[in-house]
Image 1: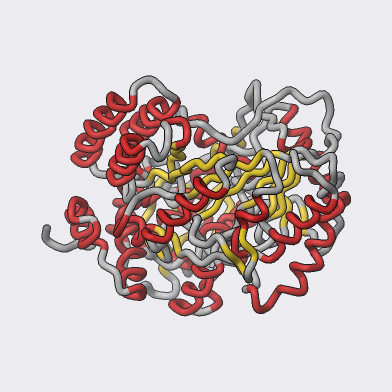
Image 2: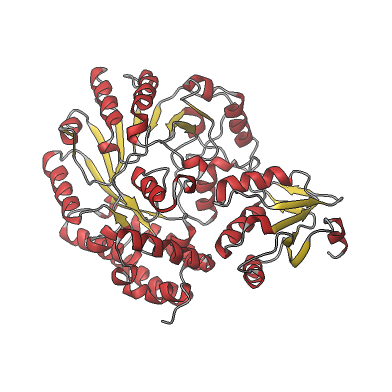
Length: 517
């Protein structure tokens, strides 16, 4: 290591050396100990990368470099005071990519290359392909086309503002993604699904063995088109919520919104959105088999009703229609969604409800719990053919309250076990159940076990068991300082109080905030 430092500029003053492949917790401790309120311009913390990094995705960047950027963010050290000493001749491009994705500090890490062999480790798998890349069309809130709704939107296949849908789906880039899947490589776009599967969680990936890299006929539309939403959910981002976007601008200015999430607000892009709707309507035909509406919030989105009008016009009443909605509004500009749903035979609605009462109103800011209950009753009474399900996101904020809510609704006969669905949150990591301290994991494990016993044998029980195993087998407690920082900022701005809503987690909040319990 000492010899490698000779490759550095003589003007650089090394304040500390850290091995690139050290344990993440150890790197975090070292960075914390080396952190200063003020560095001299020539001072650097040197991260020595010996000869390799692991690349989980063929089109991604080194895993450890990504983790390092995230740690630097949490410890709050300026990127300009970090220097990567490596044999990786592509390090500059990787630093730029990782910075764009994960850092608010747009200054790049410094870097220096020493002669040597650099190994790239890219694993292959027997089954990486997903049918959605062949017969599925997803258009995100920024008008980017990606493989599906949970795909990493930082890696688009193209944008319909600049290209036609056909040009994007048949491009060399899109064919390359499909070929990589055929060859057994994982692609960065699909990291959420692969992540979940690696942790024995259910993903939305529909695996199959394709015959070629050529796409199939589009039979499934996933429609977003904008990020208009009246909620500011704690686990969400600017990409999916115009309300969060506006709040971020109010708190930190326009430059604080990461580049890939700089989506125009409704007042700025209505003309564009109408134009893009026209590009989509040719796919809304009698032969379309499935359509999925999400957002943003689809029930308060103008283009959503334009697509419904088109489906009625072509008389495609038997299409499988699926929604993800916060269920806050059933009427938009005098258009009642229940009147539309009466035209269609196969409507499934997933209501994003993770908790009840004050907990719900805190976690999904904008919720009026009474209105949600009223809307549930309206759907059940006026459109009984609609398959209403509750799709809940399990974070450590909602876990306890959600189990109580599920028990209550089952006992009331309002929902069956099959109508209650849980998805375990993975990002942001600081809200993931893996971030909990061991005491709380043990406490909540017992509650989950009791809940499973009460539910009996069913899919919901199995999913809760998977969530419990995920919680106990992974440790991301180091992210809790980021949770406290974010929560303190949002609570002040929204005039809310975490410790009042979650007294059982008061210790987490105070310890992470360096206060006495």
